[in-house]
Image (cartoon, rainbow, N blue to C red; front, side, top):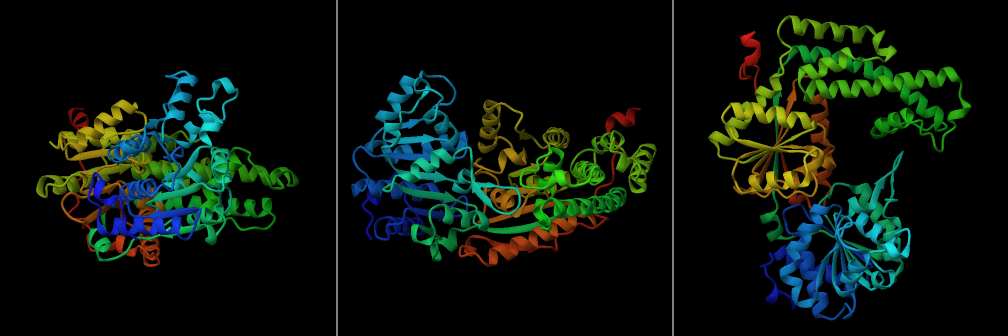
Length: 554
């Protein structure tokens, strides 16, 4: 198939992008598939491929003159990003409209803009509210104009459509189901889905079923020498932190968690009629217990004493999860305050919990309760080498918002300028910080995981560091995809973990799962993994534990 669009594109596509566009067009034109899904690692030009497909369909007049092209993105940032990238190639084919947030324009004005525009950019939530308003007068999109949509591009389609449900499996995201159902109900509509999440097999199967099975959908996996040449390799590194106090506390927390988890497993079996509790659903079930969310169970059929035991163990299980998160990924003071403030009677009467409290008190007496942890020092050591000695730019992922500020201040004292960004900042402040980082003003960006791991493009980052092991392999894949090295095609993914603790065990399992998943992928060339287990700092190399300046003065 010859592409007529190549000569007029604003960019020069790579060979694998052209091949992918041809495969998608074959799926649409010749194979008559209702939906085509492009799976391509982040940073390899999914949007470029989509632009080529849309322009080619327009040039071949396979979208009618009055037909609209709808672009759905999971969040506002991606919506704006997609709109900006597409303008240079779409402007000659019709007007574009970014569906506005809020009530900045009267519904009648929005209706007119939507009706006159050929290319519509929106989030599912925004379009839902605009189309399915409570009254006709509040509608910002008229149904008759919406029904003129003929081609739908869904960016990060797994995030837009698939919603995890209690137990195993997925369902259509209930928030957007009416919107997707209306689009799918029109027989002639064509869908193109984009995703970088090539490891999420369960969601991919859900998407296949959603569109009616293999006969209606085609998955496009780019391939070829050109693809392999540009595909990034990922080097997994780990740096250990040695801390006997935290190691001892973790052992005690593990015992307690195991005990409470057994009660949860027994409770789930009873509530589900004998079904075992899936390992990856323990936390979800625990939260359901605390919310008294027992749909589809025989909760009321049990004895009062059984459910009392279940609830108190459930509360203890959730407290133990938070305690471990604070122990490994926050300041010691935060962990100590949480431990000393626990009110769960099961924990208060457990010998292991009393030992943890005793260790906390000893730490204060011996001056080890400083807010600067051995992990903080290891991070500073690693960043100094990456930035000062090797000239890399680095993004550091953290679980807790407070730690972005805490570690940013520590690194600033060490003479390394840096920025931080998190979900409590306004959108304007977030964008300003990201622009400063992307411009090269500083080499280090601290970021809370939830904010940064999806949809934020960080083209200047050469390395990423995880201050813990909080991400699943799917989320880890997305986080690594945000990093686009300007120095080489090798991405270094570094994790800093406490030695001989649950952190190390979790990291080992994560790497095993990652390596195993990548082996079975058709796009394995895009995820060449190096498990660099040799990069293990010895106890002698670890920086000495320090006392904060304020404590020295005292």
